[in-house]
Image (cartoon, rainbow, N blue to C red; front, side, top):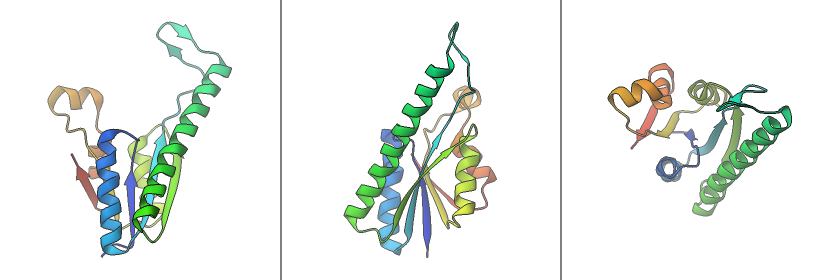
Length: 148
């Protein structure tokens, strides 16, 4: 049914539900699993509150985000390998548009399914905070399985 499943994770407790479900589905269908973590990098310098951050501080924050992203995809790979998924890869993407990076990863890696979690925000919260999941659902040509 599926040959390649992409699971989007941010390392949160909620996205662990998506990871667990994607691993189970990969096992069931003998599919390859691709775990993607998108790192949202901010501009080279920006205001944090009222304080301008130095280039060195911004670089340190970017490095920390990259290390954390690697930890997240490595954890997915370790879990999937331990459960017997035939092939698992971890991918880190850097983008200012998280949902577009997820869609692009699915396209580039020829995935049959995107699995991701949704916080289930409604009303004004969704309007103010946006929804990466909603954007993936409405713009992806790859089928999307959303878990809440």
